[in-house]
Amino acid sequence: MPIPRFYPILDNDTAVRFGLTVREAAADMIEAGARILQFRHKGLFSREVWADLESIAELCRAKDVRLVVNDRADIARLLGAALHLGQEDLAPSEARLITGPTTCIGYSTHNADQLAAARSEPADYLALGPIFGTTSKANPDPVVGLEGLRRLRPLTDRPLVAIGGITRANAKSVLDAGADSVAAIGDLFPDPRKRVSEFLAAIG
View 1 (cartoon, helix red, strand yellow):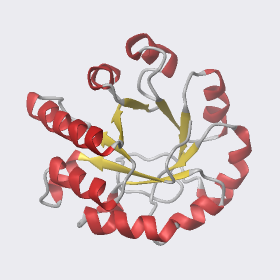
View 2 (view 1 turned 30 degrees about the vertical axis):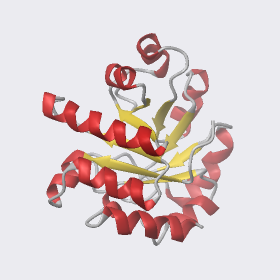
View 3 (view 1 turned 90 degrees about the vertical axis):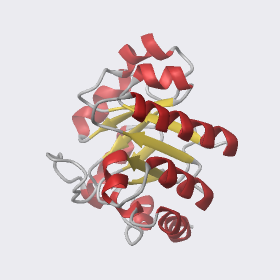
View 4 (view 1 turned 180 degrees about the horizontal axis):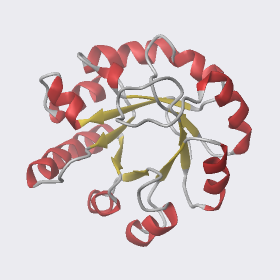
């Protein structure tokens, strides 16, 4: 399945740290031209978080933007959204028992062994990282680097989203190294609308 070349990830905690609600940040990113948007929330999925995500889903539907829910197969199914899974979450084959066969599922990988293991999983696209050093995870996996990305790219024929430490300054070099798409988290702030516009301009 095609994945847009730019893949913004809206992290709830990051938005709050910069004084924005996730609804405001999502609206800014969508208005700036994002065609896919992942909602990332690592804490308790409270009614307030659910209400925020419902509002974001409505924004995405209105603008024909693909919404991706991080980790939660049940929430993705309720919203008719795509799902992104990490190595510590349900495997894609298990998540499909909840989402059904047509839901778009992404799956994070960090090295050659995980890319190889993903061949047997029903994932529509794979993520690989961290490409560079990142502060968005407390205990990140070893850095892949651009040379590592070039070396690992041939191990899968699925769309590959690069993630980890990607900024407006280095995003184009990551695409040139073989990624189909670049994901960003921290460099979307403090002004999501402006930053998304700059990312899109940087990658052409």
